[in-house]
Image (tube, rainbow, N blue to C red; front, side):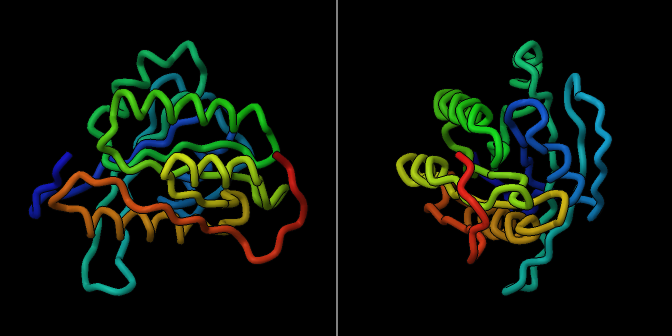
Length: 192
């Protein structure tokens, strides 16, 4: 995947099981809002976000695509992650089954969209802060790993700064970003 220097925006897609917080992360990123009430997606929801890079005088425009997590919509979801530059593979820090679903999503992406930069994102760090299995999986599979709380906003800005920096650095080549693990300094409890 190549991004032309004059291209207006970069496609970012969030994948993961139902109720892991994909919508909440993207809503927090795009509008700095959070709501406890969500309707299930049956296709995709679209947001735009402009990120000003901290160390450069450059704005990166992101197209944020929120996809349905239910398996019955997988064939529709495939239409949305095609040609994505960054794929957020989201799981809930307090639900080990959602990590397994994230691993399955990652395996699909390796086969179908291997040029995309993939980030494993553990959401709900306000409930649980550390998941050793996710950290190990990210390292073993060359994934950047982020721990966030869409509810409290923790880690969301750092995630999207990282994504914007990847987009800026990789405009002319389709190499996945190197592994980065970003976790809070103190851990409340282990969950996965």
